[in-house]
Image 1 (tube, rainbow, N blue to C red):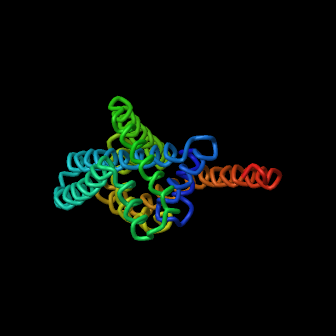
Image 2: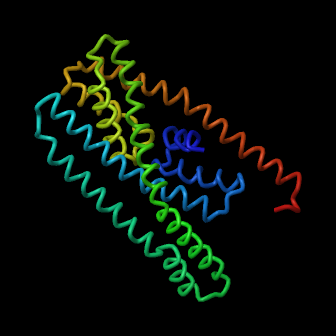
Length: 255
């Protein structure tokens, strides 16, 4: 499901949130109760922002160590802290029961008993989210595995640097992975990060002594990987949805 979700977020112009919606939908299709499917994706998304912030700070520290330049450190840290504070606020309102509260407010505005099911769904989602956050070991493990996966993904950049006969070091690979991913996440509204990712590679590559054409080549290599993994992911998603639609048409009474 994560593979398909990442494929949707990367290749479909859905402001990077479409993949999370698809992940929740796929979990529900495969039998997970809707509150569990939505709550799991919501918690994973929230924790992902915190781990991405830590990875961003790691990249900034390594970039300062590698280049000695500090002019960009202040704005990057301030921006990261603002983002973390915003997500931290979102985390706390999740713990307070935001979905049940919103559902009750909508129910009062609608002034109809038919909205009671929405209130119950919101309260069920609140209970699920609290239960997930209460699993401290699982939460820490999720963050640890996410950080590890981000670092391991830098191996792709190291291979590209080596193939292009550039300064292929683990430090440079982690710096590029961290900073370019941060730039792309900041510009999440740009479909597939077109132009943003390329600009990030050129900018950070210049700081690391990589010329513009080589930095652009690194970005294009990353694009090829996105297409190579993303297109099969989209096709798999459509296959799952198509099979589900055929089953519903064949058994209309089961709906």
